[in-house]
Amino acid sequence: MSADRNLAGRRVVITGASSGIGAATAVAFAKAGARLVLGSRGEDGLDDVAQRCVEAGGSAIVRPVNCTDAGAVAVFAAEARDLLGGIDLWFSCEGVGVLGRYEDVPIADHARVVDVNLVAHMNDVHAVLPIFLAQDHGTWVNMISAGGFVATPYAAAYSASKFGLRGFSSALRGEVSKRPHIHICDVCPTFVDTPGVDHAGNYTGARLSLPPGSLAPETVAKAVVRLATHPRNLTAVGAPAIAFKLGEFAAPNLLAAIMSGFLDSWSARAADGNDNDGVLFEPGVPAGPDGGRRDPHRGRKVAAAAGGMAVLVLAGVGVWLGRRR
Image (cartoon, rainbow, N blue to C red; front, side):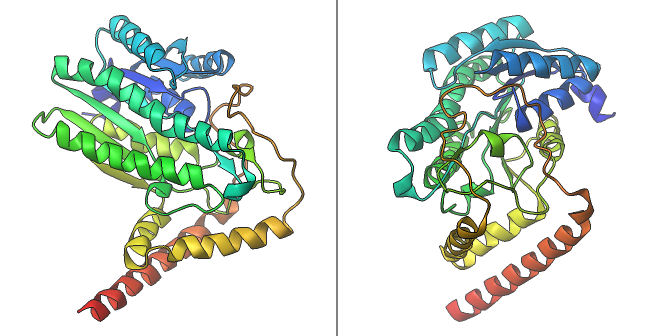
């Protein structure tokens, strides 16, 4: 049976659906015939994504919701359940970021990142888990990132939120371990080319950019859609994700120190930018899934480099284990 047939009629809720990975995943589910309720702060962005779902051959119901408001999320979840007749999969994809040395970023911006990236996801689960328990089935997909394994200098609050999300998922997984039809799934991609770069707060003094080889949002969306029929605890998307995880195991804080030095050098050499809080506190304009920064001609070179990095990390792990013995 094809994946599309498996997903026809599947009842899916996506929060953080107005742009980026959430938007790409909404379109992918719509194309596969799933029934969708989409939530996000920005109503205009949601309407744009709903139209993309129609163009993909599906449809979606949209409801603006601020997921940092637990009461609002509870109302949203109940309405989604009633509209769909139940919820088979909930994808928590809301997220924001702010770049800059910790002391240079206003503490309110740091707090906002944790509120959206961690607390909002907790609000989502608090609203949907009782529905899953009553149904005795359901899949919660938690958008983390490779940043849930490797600390991210110049994004300390982001790092705190992603490490926190990983611990939160693990705790939940233990609580539902006796309910075999309820799944807690973490998705950890590396850099993804979404409008998130334009939406991020920036206190680096430099114009933000993405590294070569960043993933297309549709690549991550494909991994999320697969979890609807093949749930698993952890899905790493992008070859470097595995290398990051192994590298952090082999030499804690080494990658963070290297990245910090790189970012110090980058911020000194990059084109000037204006300090701002991005869309931390207000929705951005409709932006769709894609950030439009990828260079399609670099794919093979980056894949080869990622493979080389993985080999080096594995070798480092072997050396470290040998010394331990």
